Length: 160
Image (tube, rainbow, N blue to C red):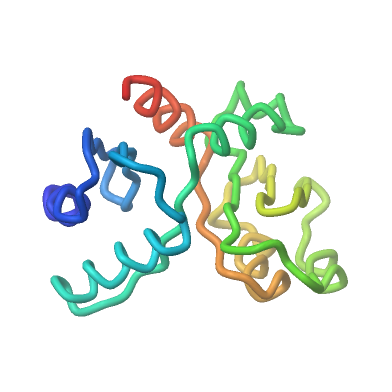
């Protein structure tokens, strides 16, 4: 994560803070930047340093807050690793709802809201076929974080 901090600081981002070893970072920019352009710059900088190009999805602090405030599954507060928010690179144009329905277990709940998918999987995300089918069914890039991680990231963002 130290290298990620260095990459972000090298792109003139400030107050960079990271959380766990999965590429979670919060930061400030000196000026307003186009998120798509910044995603591209970060991906290119990582590729130059490490030889692979990751998917980068940037959310503003307000977008993160709004996604969390819109959580349709408040029961996840009791088990914060049972809820995952999938942040999408774009709104899906033609999601394959039949594929999603076929992969969904009776205990799972799914809610699609523009560029966020809420997946409540009380049996665990590792056992969820639905989680594995999401990107393919939606046709867009996604990155997922569990509710516990999002609470930590929101708290980090509040310190900036």
